[in-house]
Length: 413
Image 1 (cartoon, helix red, strand yellow):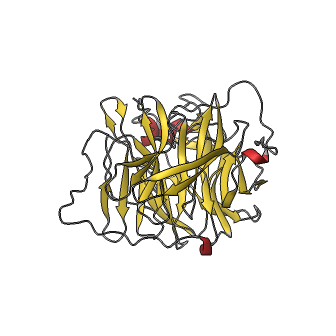
Image 2 (spheres, one colour; image 1 turned 45 degrees about the vertical axis):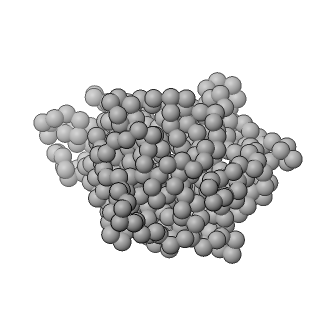
C-alpha cells in the first residue's frame, strides 16, 4: 500500500520555502496525492519518485531518443517537461520550447496557439512570524520563497506573459508588512479556453490544496466546494472534452494508507460523483468522454488503466510493471502517452491503442525518450487540429437506479 505523506504541506506553505533565519522551514516538499508542489526538475511526483540519482547529468538541450525505427509516430503535438524545460514531440521529432530550467505543467489552449504553464520564481521575502509561531506578533522573519506563477507563451515558445502571480501581501497574521503566496498547481485549460482548473489553497492560502478555478486572463482564485477527506485535498484536475465536467484526484486514505479516488465534478449542477474503486489517480479523458485513463496504485507500484467515466471500474489495464504513471489520452483516442520509471530515471512512452465496445487494446508501446531525464511532476499533454478529433459524446444522465458515490464513502478496489 502507498503510505501517505500527509499533511503539513497541504495546510501550510512552510515546507515549500527555505528559511534563512531562526525557525527555518526546510526545503522543497511534495504535496498530496500524486502531483505535489515541487521545484520543477527535481523528479518528484508525490508518490516517492525521487530525483535522478548519480550517473549522468542530463544536457538540457539534448534528449537521448531511441532509433527512429523503434519510436512511435506522434499524432498531433505532445508536450512534456525535462529538467525544468518544456519540449514538444511531433511525428518523430522533438523541439525544445523553453530553456530557463524553471518551467513545469504545460497545457495547450484549445486552438493550439498558446501554451499555459507554471514558472517557479525565487524571492527573498519577509514573513509574519505568526505563520510559524503561535501567538507571535512582534517581528518579520526572512525566508526564501520558491513560488509558482501561471504563465503563457506562444506555441513556438516565445512571448512569455504572466497570467497570475501567486504572491500577496499578508494581512492574515501580524505584524503587517509580510508576504505570502498561494499554491497554483497542475493547471488544465477548459475546452472553451476561458477557464483554468487548478489545485490551489485559495486567495489567502488559508486552506488545503483543492479543486479551484480561475480565468485564463488571471484574476481571483475560485475554490470549488466539493468537500474533501482527512484534510488531504484534491489534485490532477482535467476538463472533460465537452467542458461540462472536471475529473480530479480526490485524495483519501484507509488507515495509514493512501486510497485516492477519481472525482467527477459537474459544472451545471455543482455535483460530485466519486467513481467506484480506491487507488485511482491522475485522470485523463478519452475524446468521447466515456472513459478515463488513470494510474492505479497498488503495493506493486503504479500502472496505467482505463476506467468507465460514469461509474468507475476498470475496462482495461494497459501496463503491469508497477512503474507507469501520468497517462494522457491523445485527442483522437488512438494513442496514450505516459511516464515510465526505469531505475531512478523517468522517460516518456507512447502506446498506440484500439478502443472497442468492451475495452481498450494496446497495439504497440514504444519509448519517445531514453535518457531518464524527464520531470515526473509534469504529466504529458496533447494538442491536435480540430478536424482530426472526434466529437465528444454528450454527458449521460444517470438512471434513476444509479447510486453515485458520495464523499466519505470507502470501498474496496
